Image (cartoon, rainbow, N blue to C red; front, side, top):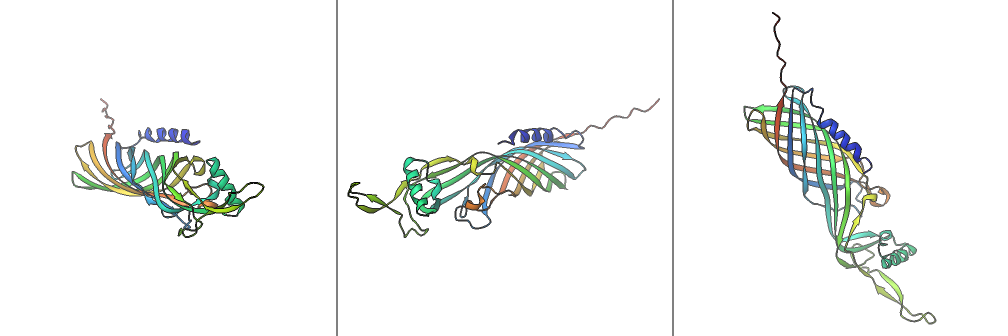
Length: 286
């Protein structure tokens, strides 16, 4: 969030700097994003997340440089994330949100147990504000239809990311769930202790702010294309599709959680209005 003010300034500059374009298109885009949390090293904490569809939309300006070539920029909001349900690992050091969890975490770490397993539902939710700058080339297919391709770079800033977990489960020492976690419990007295091993289970329902665990910005490549249909000389409908891939690892602690990059495919419908630059009239000398 520390770069968010810079993002707004950059967006303002980009979205108001089309005065030198031959023609400028301004529009809105509303769509659905299919994000992909891609682990490059098959880390046990970051693999096996499934796509969660989310809203992806924004406002854009398209600065025409020639009849077919333009520079397109946008200010968009996107919700990204993923689901992982079933048996999955938990770092022992993160079980400290309650007094009971702190006691369990301390015991596990004293025994050299860094990871335990449990069955629960896990959803990671990320909201982003982003700006792409894309080079675009368009082909006209008659009076009404057109197609285009574009590619470029983007920067995104994350907003209040959360991890939402739910479910109650017994804890295990292995991913297959065949070795239950057991801790010694004294059923005797302090003078005459009598320890027995007891299975451990817990309620994993929680909403956790993970802002400090994640990179606050991403930078990556974006590519795509689309189809346009002219409604009038100055307005058009747009079907846009794009893909993106972030270069900056999502987690700050890559030693524990591995290297994960955020990618996404987006399908959108949009509308654009064209502002044509007026030619200056030349008054002949008398």
